[in-house]
Image (cartoon, rainbow, N blue to C red; front, side, top):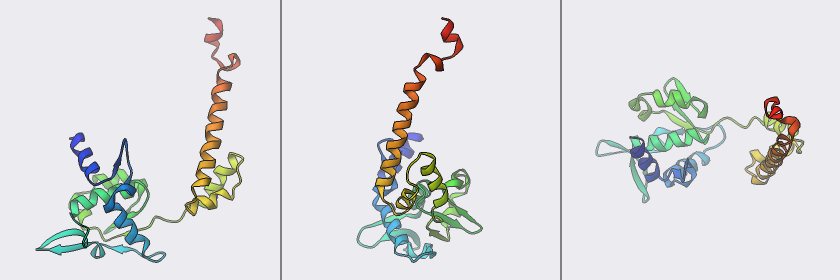
Length: 183
C-alpha cells in the first residue's frame, strides 16, 4: 500500500527524491498562485477551484488540467504539510500542526472543504530569538519572512560551524565517559 501511495504522490509531482516537495507540482503551484492572488486576510473558496462537469466535481485549471477532488486533497494535504496553507472544513481549520487530525478525518468531509487560506504570519520575535541565541544579527529574521534565502543560508552555516565544534570538543578525552577512561 505504501508503494502505491508513493506512486500517487510522485504522479502529482509532489515527491522529490525522498521528501514531499509540493512546489514542484503544477497542481500545487496553481493552488499557491490562486491563494497569492488574494488580498491579505482573504480566503480562496472551494468554488474558486472546483467546477462541476457532468455532475462530477473537478479541480480545473482551464487549458491546463482537470483533476478529481480526491486527488486535489492529496495536493492540499501536501501543501498543509509543508506549511503553505490552512485547509478549512466546517468547524475546523487544519494547519501543519494538525496533520494527524487531518489524516483521521473522513475523505468525504475533506472533499467538501470550505476554503483555503494562508497560514498566520511569521512569529518574528521567536525567529529573532533563534538568531540572537546563535549570535547572528536578529535583523536576519525579517529577511527570512521576506523569502530571502541568504538569511537561511547564514543560519545553516552557523549551525554547521557549531556542529563541527561540538564534534571536535566531543572527541577530547575529558568529554568521554568514565568507563572509556578506565579501559
